[in-house]
Each structure stands twice: as structure tokens, then as C-alpha cells.
Image (cartoon, rainbow, N blue to C red; front, top):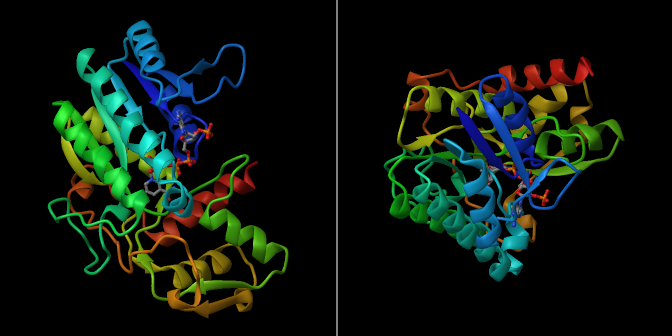
Amino acid sequence: MKVLITGSDGLLGMKLVKYFEEHFETIPTYQTKINESSIKMDITLKDEVETVIRKIQPNIIVHCAAMTNVDECETNKKQAELVNVTGTKNIAELACENGCKLVYLSTDYIFDGLKGYYKETDIPNPISYYGKSKLKGEEAVKNICKDFIIARSSVLYGWHPVRLNYVTWIISELKKGNKINIVTDQFNSPTLNDNLCEMLLKLIENNQIGIFNTTGGERISRFDFAIKISDIFGLNRNLINPITADQLSWKAKRPKDTSLDTTKIAKFIKPLNIAEGLNRLKNEIEKM
Ligand SMILES: NC(=O)c1ccc[n+]([C@@H]2O[C@H](COP(=O)([O-])OP(=O)(O)OC[C@H]3O[C@@H](n4cnc5c(N)ncnc54)[C@H](OP(=O)(O)O)[C@@H]3O)[C@@H](O)[C@H]2O)c1
């Protein structure tokens, strides 16, 4: 079984390549060529996508590549549309033409956050351009492909050699002794990148098709999550200052509660709770 991965140097993609290499013939692709042997595939260039997919002939494409900075998507909608919508259409069309399964990574930000604990069947209503572009990507996948998985995730965290994410940023700031302001009124379902890899593997192994919430198993506010991070990593929780979202001036609106219901994925694998995910990350970092 050949699996081609897009966005292979991202927070999820990098972990997924390592994880899937143990199970499949895994082909990482990158927006830019990172070394002599790496495969460049800019998803916005249809010809390039066509050449690579025709040559590799994967059985499965896991499409992680995206413009993920929520505020940048708001200020540069054209680029967000190009990467998250046109890029996804390019991948979906080539997946369909070459008879391969497409696994598309989507987000909790397709919801307006007024309800929380969203099920796969709830109606999306994004309030940011990032959310809108990812939802358009979902629609392209559903319209173009028959054999697809849409895996919706939330506040992805984990170890990455270069880029900080919510958890590693908090660890880094608290270690430096910096005070940080964290909102108490925004709720999500944080997801360890390793656990998301395991969920995607289970869905593929079980030949699943359709939409799945693939997040951690616990809803938490950003503030309470920051406190748990400081406690588990032995850092000073007094540096974390609680504020509310209206005290911040983000470019894009943030939904209040986009926690996802994980009942459907839990039939295949147990989503980790916050303490389990953070302790796994701590063990990984300590072994380095
Ligand atoms: N991070 C989260 O909290 C979160 C939450 C829910 C869902 N998701 C979804 O999960 C997926 C993975 O997220 P992530 O956090 O791993 O993202 P990430 O770390 O920001 O990585 C995104 C990847 O996409 C690549 N990319 C961007 N434009 C591209 C293009 N034109 N052609 C090819 N590759 C391109 C980037 O390449 P460069 O490194 O070269 O820029 C990077 O490798 C995304 O689809 C995202 O929407 C993420």
C-alpha cells in the first residue's frame, strides 16, 4: 500500500510520515524541495500535482497541507482560497482520476462555536475565513471523491523541531519566566499529533468513508489547558493571567466553543484526554 502525504514538514505531516512509514510505503511531499531526494509538490500548481500523482500512483493521499494561520487567512483571503480551496480541489481531482482514497484534514473552525460538542452531522457555519476556506475544501472533497475521509481536528499540539504550537509556545514562555495572557472563554478539544496519526491509521485500516471528528476526548478552555500544561511540565502557573476574548484584538473572529463529539471515532480507538496527551508529549520530549 502506497500512501502519499502533503504538507510533510507541518506539525501533523512530519509526525504522520514517521508513523505511517512503519505501516505503509510512505511518500512525503513538500511545498518546496527540502533536499536532493525530496519530492516537491506545491498543491496550488495543478500540473505539478498531476505529474507527481501520476508518477507515484499512490493508493491513498493524506492531505495535510494548508494555510493554517487563522489571522493570515483573514488578511490574505486570496492566498487562503488558493491553498485551502484550489489546492484541495487539485488534490481531489487527481485522487479521483487515479482511483485513490483521499484523507482530508479539516478543522473545528468550520463551526460557529455557539453550541459545542459538535457531531459529524451538525451543520457548519464558519465565522472566520480560515474556517470558510477549509469548509469549501470539505465540499470539494465530497463533490469530487467517492472514497474519502474528512478528519476534523482541533488545537493540534505536539513536538516539532522548528515550529511552536499552543502547547510548546506556553512551555517556552513559562520556562523563560514570561507572563502570558490566556482566554478563559474559548473552548476546544485539543489533539496530540501522535493520537491523530493513530486515529487516521485506524480509519484507513477499517476502510472507513465519510466525516469523522478526530480530536482529543476532552473539552477544555484555553486557560484551563494552559494551567494543565504548566502543572504537568512543572512550570509556574502564576505566570498565566486569565483574560476574556474581548480584551484581545485578533484579525479573525474566534468561535467560543468548537469542542467536538468523539463518539464516532471512539468505536475504533480511544481519543486521549488532556492529561494522557500532555504526559505522552512530556515523555517524548524527555527522551530526546
Ligand atoms: N494546527 C491546528 O491546530 C489544526 C487544527 C485543526 C485542523 N488542522 C488541519 O490539520 C492539517 C495539518 O495542520 P498542521 O498544524 O500540521 O499545519 P502546519 O504545521 O501549518 O503545516 C501546514 C503544511 O502545509 C504546507 N503547505 C502550505 N502551502 C502549501 C502549498 N501551496 N503546497 C504544498 N504544501 C503547502 C506547509 O508547507 P511549508 O512548511 O513549506 O509552508 C506545511 O508543511 C491542516 O489541514 C489544518 O487545516 C490543524
